[in-house]
Length: 147
Image 1 (cartoon, rainbow, N blue to C red):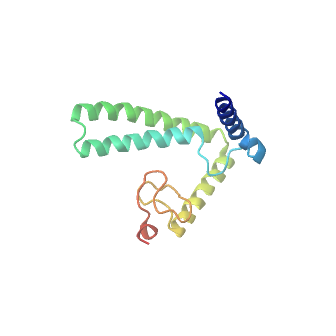
Image 2: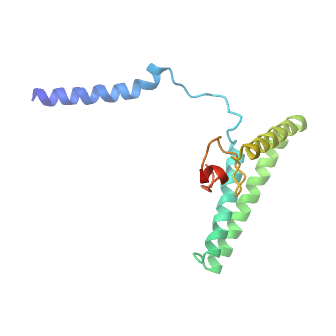
Image 3: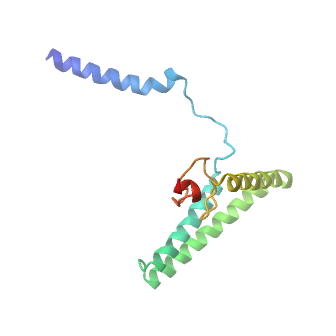
């Protein structure tokens, strides 16, 4: 009986320590948005466009018949257009100068990724330096993947 209480106490202590670990180490979640973090509208746009691409691939691979393909394509196209409009509206809300600065920063990031060889040739996602595969689509990244 004592071993049972001892076992339960050890498990409870382990659970409490596991839960308290972030507090003890001083780890906290940032309330600020990082520069490379997608906004909600950007993420929605990316998901809609990737889903549309996947439906296209599935149809070409013979996984979908034409009726299902046309139905899914119509639904996903409408969703992608709504996501694109929402993203454009969100960017327009930033103001012209802030929108231009954000666009210039994105262009600089893509150029940097191309120079470093970490921009995905398939989906143009800029990956972390040293990546072998694209974080967005899984495509092998050129020379880095060969080494």
